[in-house]
Length: 117
Image 1: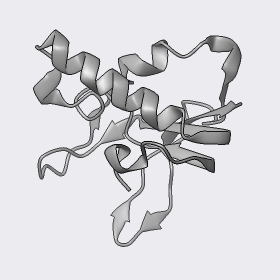
Image 2: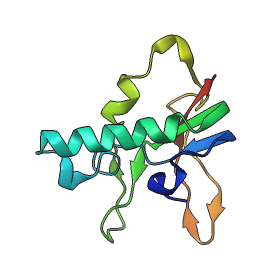
Image 3: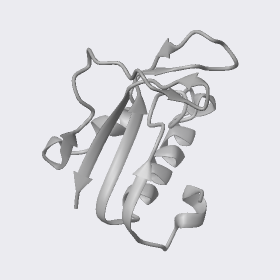
Image 4: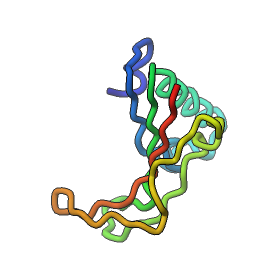
């Protein structure tokens, strides 16, 4: 379901994935303040769809644009705007890496932040 389609709906549990600079907010909006504000409003729509629990995720590394080398990701600026008292970082130690295979590709550690509403 897209964030646009979620307007007006509520769910007990909501996952917003890919909260990384270049993904959310999208790279095309990074130089236009009005576009960043629209992305911020969409993020707010997604966050406010959660009735009980909201999980926000960002990858520490991501393969981009068909390359095999993972690049370090920068967490989305929208994560910084969430009050610290509402966030519980449940991603585990940063020194760990995922070691299991998922459909033939190596999985990478993901930062997961749970917000309890």
